[in-house]
Image (tube, rainbow, N blue to C red; front, side, top):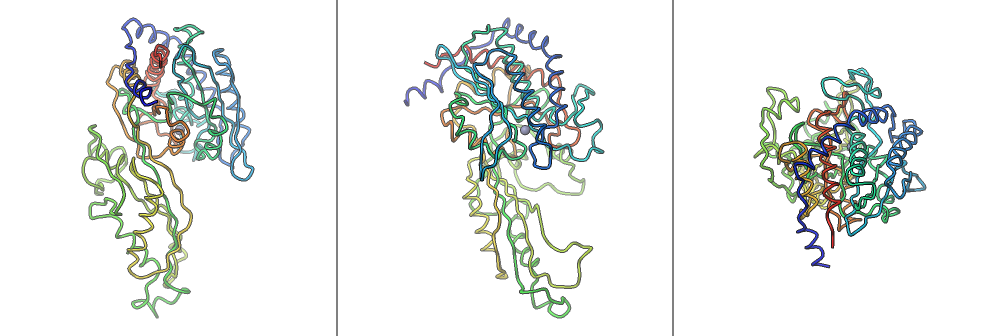
Length: 477
Ligand SMILES: [Zn+2]
């Protein structure tokens, strides 16, 4: 078993010749206009997996995606599947397509999601969210980048794999297009358990992230996790007149700000002890760029210390994201007896959400200098991700991306979380997980005016095609 694992890890993927690259590149170029039209059709379906939205749109979008993969004619089976979860709830429709590997070739699972974020305020969009529009080399529309472009990248690369390698190619494939990613993937765990056999792959490509820029491709090797916590701080039995008792009796907010004030050091770095932090990127990202990208005001200082990228990728970040307290309009001269707060803690790759949550709770209790009553409430946990030992798949993906973009692929981190990746790793511990994607720093996923950079998209399809062609030549034993 051990020696098999070593063979897998040290396998050297085949290199792509100039002639092969040219052929693949020409094929992508030829298919690209049609791929864009299919993408537009998908963007026109507003499939949103949140309760307030019309669920029939998700069925419509699932059906459209299913027929796309059926049309390819290379899968043994293409199905729409749903999994139950919780108390008899049913997850959103997902598309699963499978094709068995032949001649000891690996199986590659290609993941994307067909649901999208709600459009938000229509007035903030320069074009209608669900009517795709191409302007200045980008396609605008909700889901154009996140993550319907991921679906099309899978569709187009498989179509061209069959065209170039022949429809009887050896590579095993599994397609998994989820329908509820933006809603937190509630049925993901039970879906994986129920369809473990169909979804099993040697490599899992999660196409839901992005590149370093429109011209420099990337593989996302780290993602932060999450531990958020609601808690209530109480100092008084009931509200009292601030003129009568103020000065001798603390209101709840005073107790809370003392706790909060202890959570960051003078630079704004999180000072909760016991949390992981890493410095591990040699990419350049300047303070000036950070200011431009984030909209940080000229007079406001950045927080944290050391290079910028580890601060947003591989170190913890703590944010007060909610507060229940009288509004200014309803305020009166009273000592408010209790306050409820919600803290969101992004945790570093390598850290554990349960452990981090305990560290956060411990910090609150030990810094409660006024002895307020503290009640902990709802929590939300998400595991971080860190690409382990790189095997042939990472090497092949790097080669493919570098060739397709004409620029060397880099490793990037994402400060946000995709908690289901940890579930994929748990259920398929042998698989190599590659997080890729079509977004770029201007894609504005989840925001108004979401868009896809078309040239970068074409290169992303080519990269994935080269990856599949390479995988099709690798014999695992
Ligand atoms: Zn996404």
